[in-house]
Amino acid sequence: MIPMHWFWILDCKEDLSTRTNWAYLPVFLKDVTHMGILQSISTAFHEGGTGMWPILLTSVVIIALIVERAVYLLRASVDKDKLLALLKSQVMTGNVQGAIKVCSGNPTPMTRIVQAGLMKFNKSDDEVQAAMDEAALRELPRINIRTPYLAMLSNFSVMAGLLGTIGGMIKSFGDVGSAETSNKAAGLAAGISEALNCTFFGILISLLGLLGYSFLQGKTTKVIDDINEVTVQVVNLVTSHRTQMQPS
Image 1: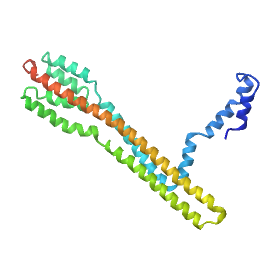
Image 2: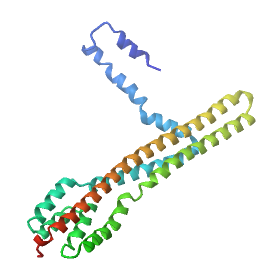
Image 3: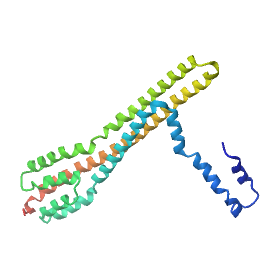
Image 4: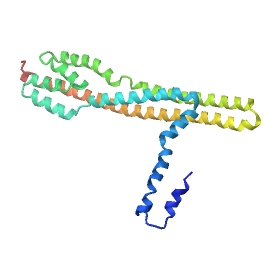
């Protein structure tokens, strides 16, 4: 409900830019603060009952996973075109050690895989490919690790919300059956409020997890695709310029 003094401000005949009217601005901001989002969330959480705690725990884990995976994937991302240009400039001049230093100076899953192949530049093509495949077997699982948990936790959040909903409805009808006539309406309303709050927060956290999962899966796919593209080009680069590459 909007406080009456807000309407007084709107109905005031004087210019709102005057000093007298601006004096009421702190009152307006104070009322907005009292109806803040955090207070509303806190109230809804307490009204949701014990069914809110599993949802809260799930939300903490989901947020932690999203942040951790996002930071890792951002650090694992490499400008593939720039990397390939640097590698080509080194390899085509026969400076394989310079190409290796380019990779070691920027340690990411992609550069570690490429570096493993460059270390075998004086071996056969199969050995170069085998070295990169071996490095890929170590690096690629780290890129996708823990991300699938987000899908599971999103489903768990919905189930926890539904469980809280059922618990709230059971409590509601139990209170109605045992309460006096005058208290039945209040007991029913409290139980329904608990049930709906659990449903709302369960679905909300589930949506957060699914959005995070979709973002991370897209980023993971891009990183892996870039690695596959770069490794193929590096193998072709080493194969076609092996005679120019000199060991240190």
